[in-house]
Length: 112
Length: 113
Image (cartoon, chains in turn red, purple):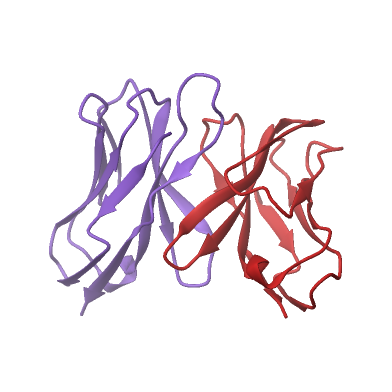
């Protein structure tokens, strides 16, 4: 089954404790991206990747890092999480950046 | 910078009614426009993708139209059902070398039995 898988789905952590949210897709997609969704602000793009070793900032990249060492994986790294990073995070992928976008189920992160 | 607006923010209709959701965008230089559905606490599911060269796209009871020149797209839902209750979002990848996708904030649709 074609899918985008995120882990963990739910996480509660404390300020400053590094964490990684993994994202994996099995559709051989070149384009992958991360979004955060907050009430009243909608979906905002954090980072995106056009292909392996090619990443770029979205609209809200501060406090986040990404890497794309393999085509299927695109982890989101929070080096020193802060409470303002409490949010619902989505990973998505598509064949090309303007292709049909497939989303993961989301990862709800709470930073205390 | 591309801005995407969805009106109304919320809509409540009785079952069986036909309805229209609106999406407007400020920069008409787009590759395509995509409509999504999001159920509470879930990810987004792609409904329809309209290429910039198309004017309409249909899937079952859903019909999406695109008017690039006026910066507008509509999603028409025929014979609405309670299972259609969800938030509907549109997204626009801009043209040129800008690869940032921009989403509208969505329309929360409630279909009452």
